[in-house]
Image (tube, rainbow, N blue to C red):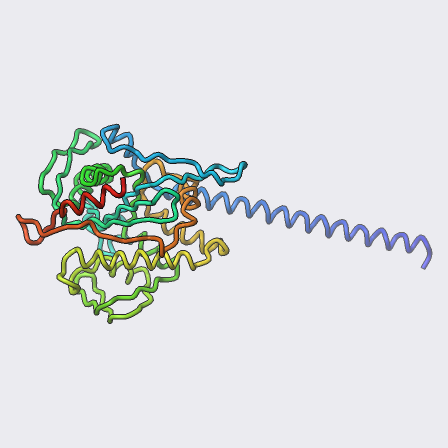
Amino acid sequence: MTRHEEQGDAGRQAGRRSRALRIVGLTLTGALVLGVAAAGWAYWRLDRNIRSVDIDSALGDDRPARAVVTPSPTAPADASPLPTGSLNILVLGSDSRSGKDNQELGGGDSGGARSDTAMVVHIDAGRTKATVVSIPRDTLVTRPSCPLTSGSTAPAYGAMFNSAYAVGGPVCAVKTVETLTGVRMDHYLEIDFSGFAKLVDALGGVDVTTGQDIDDDKSHLRLKAGTHHLDGKQALALARTRHGIGDGSDLGRIGLQQTLVKALLEQMAGAGLLSDPARLYQVADAVTTSLTTDTGLNSLNELVSLGRSLKGLTADRVRTVTMPVVTAPSDPNRVVAQEPAADDLWASLR
């Protein structure tokens, strides 16, 4: 082979390498652009999923004092400081029949949804411990006057606790809880039947141990005492079960709900979501699709910031209790707050 031929061959090889490098570069650039676009679309979708209610504007200043929130002293200088102050969040599970999925899961009338589950989640200063207080929905309370889009509701005495949501939505639910407890609710989170079931399914189910047989014709759940792996529909049925356990009251159901909350926290902690972006997106989509928040948590950034501030909170550091109650003198099927025990409990969260 002549020198001219060798040079030509070398040139052709160099040209092929150059074209190959350009193709690889274009491929990587395209993949990067697609990845960024996909991430942007995912963020946009999750952010738009979240519905919110401006509770602060609706209730104004006639509320319990807000706890002081302080930035984390250990936050990196180039990062937004994470809050470390105590926090109170009202978490409601609603039985709305809005949407086909909720209808199939047995939600209530779309025009009269109720707060089927109510929990005040108190996160201690430092955000490494929490107390979850369940409020029985059958509790008779003083329901204050609540603002509506036009006018306001009339105050009611000896009203069912869960009627607040039915007559005035999230705003009235928050105001009624603050009137009952004297504790400022810093945030509000509501998830419906469909969202709860989808969350459990996205996590791959949840393991729950029951101390007695469950046979409830209302929730259609039948389980022998022991440990069971439940899918979303079964977990929702467990959260709604009250007949066939204990005395058939809401107190028995609350015990099951608290067991379920702890099991879900453990499931999320062990799911390895941060190392599995696809599964993380599935869980986030399941939650945000059926989530209503106050305007302080109505974006993905705010929810992520809250989650990051709770990274030291593990399931074994979450205490679950029920507001102390006694049978209502006026109705054996209802309860009222037991004093001074109930007030002592709420005072410990202020």
